[in-house]
Length: 290
Image (cartoon, rainbow, N blue to C red; front, side, top):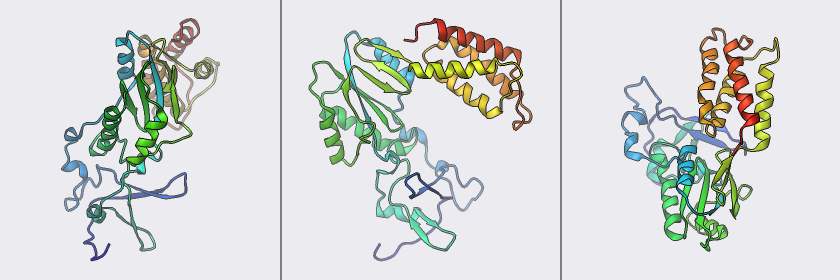
C-alpha cells in the first residue's frame, strides 16, 4: 500500500461475522438507491454481459434423459467458495469499510467471487469448470452454488484426487468433508442421482419428513404461522421437481399466504389447502419415488 490510496465512497458496504468468527464484507449491487453522487453497481453494469452457468434440476435431468449408456459421478465442493478470489490493489479503494471505532477494514477477497449465479462474479467458477473439462477426460460438470457434479464415462481413468490436486494449483481448494470419488450414485441438488441406472430419487428420510409435516396440517384445530407455511411451500416445490404433476397442488399454499393479513397471527389451514395436502400424501405414499 505504499504511496497511499485515494479513498472515496462507491456504495454501502456491510460487515458480518462468519461462522468461523471472521469479518466478511459484502456490497449489495443495488445500493445505494437514492444517492446521485454515489452510483450503485447495477446502475452501470449490464448483467447480460456476464452470463454464467447455473445448473438446476431441469438441466441435470435433461442430461440424464439423453443418455443411452451408464456413467460415473463425483462431487467437488469449493472450500470457502465465496472468499477464494483475491482482490487486486487497484480495487482496494472500493473495498474499505469504516468501523464504529473509526478504523478501516480492507477486504482482500472478492465476496461471492467464484459462485454467484449472475453478474460478473460468476465468471471465475465458469473458467475453472472449462479448465477442468479441458485438462481431464470428463463428460461434463454441473454447477450449483459451491457444489459441482462431475460426470465421466465408465472407461475414463480420471481420478478425483488428480482433479483436486490440479484445482489446488489453480487456487481452488476442495472441501474435503464433502469431497467424494467417482461412483454410481451421488447426492446433488438434494436428490440422489444414479449414473448407472440413469435415475433420480428423493432421500427416503426426506420423504418421511415431508409426510410428517403434511400430516400435521390435517390435525384438527392445529394452527400455523406464515413463516411455517412459506417454508412448507418451498419444500414441496423442491419435491415437485421430481413430481411435476404435483406443482399445481402447491397453489393452495400460496393462495393461503396471499390471504394472510396479520402475518404474526397463526391460522388454521383452509379447506382447499387440506384437499391439496391429501393429494400430496396420496402421491408420496403410493407412487414410485424414482
